[in-house]
Length: 54
Image (cartoon, rainbow, N blue to C red; front, top):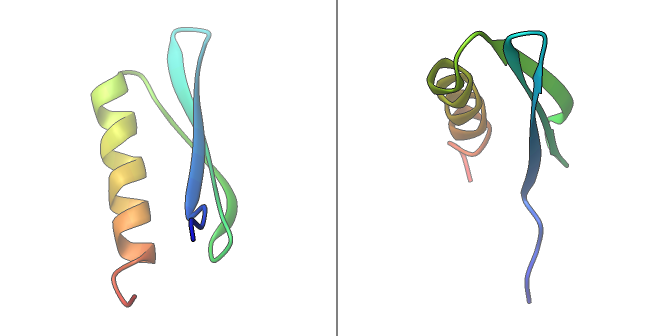
C-alpha cells in the first residue's frame, strides 16, 4: 500500500524561487530563496528533520 508522505511545488516569482511543502505531520509551509540550490537545501533539511524519528 502506498502512502503519500510529502508533496511540494516550486514556483518562480519576482526573481526568486518559492517552495510550498505539505505533509501530514508538518502541515503546509513555505520557503523562498534567490537561487534554486539554496531553496532545495532548505526543503531537504526540513523534510529530513521531519522524518528523522520514523
